[in-house]
Image 1: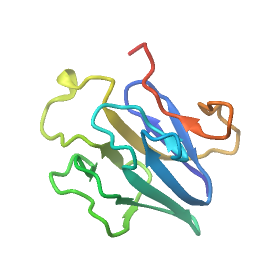
Image 2: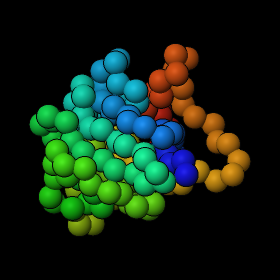
Image 3: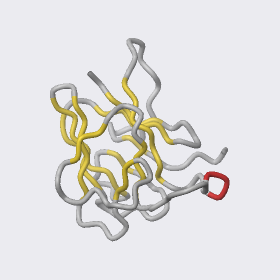
Image 4: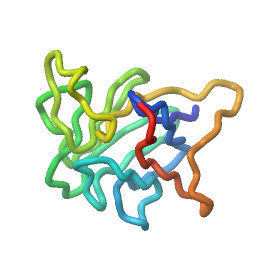
Length: 134
């Protein structure tokens, strides 16, 4: 089973094959995410045996699942298809109209049988820069 993260506003996709993915702003990350409040090395996402997990690295702003006020922390947390991951931003309540597209908020999705286009910066890394259009 292959998963991907889809940005909730832009639709940008980060494909997640089996293994560990380093998420953050740094060029050494396997998925470079240049969103507001992202740390250089923000989180790890693990895809293993048809399951997907996330944990924080030593980040100031945290990772939040489904708009919870509680951070994920440094222990692996299992995710489900449809979960929303917030990298670096703690959101709650009815704030959708106020959220900028430059926030790193993604929905966990499962690959369908056909292949989708990935955002790739040419060296095998996924470039998760925000799109210029809403």
